[in-house]
Length: 93
Image 1 (tube, rainbow, N blue to C red):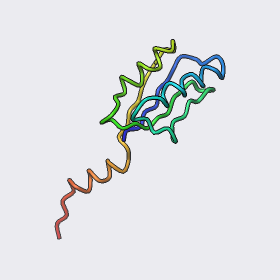
Image 2 (image 1 turned 180 degrees about the horizontal axis):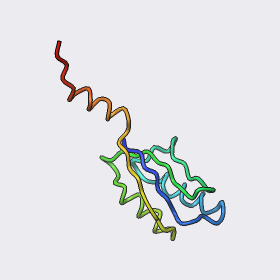
Image 3 (image 1 turned 135 degrees about the horizontal axis):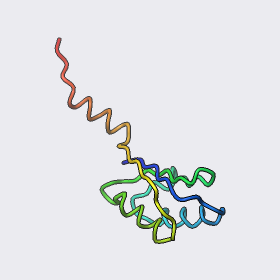
C-alpha cells in the first residue's frame, strides 16, 4: 500500500467533494475506509494498492471530473518501510 496526498484547485462546494469521493471509491485498489476528500484545504488523502492502481490513474479520475491536480505526494506505507529496513539491517554481535 502507498499513501498519497493530492492538492487540488480550490473546491467551491460540497458537491465537488462528493463527486471526487464517488469517483475514487469506484476504483479498484483504493482503500475506501481511509480515503478522505478535505473540502477546506482542497486535498485528497488516499491509501492505494500500487499493484492494482497507479497514482496517475487516481489523478486521471480526478481530472476527468474537471478538477485540476496541482501537486501530489506519494509515500510508501510505514509498515512496509519498517519491514524493508529490518530485512536489510545487519546485526553484529
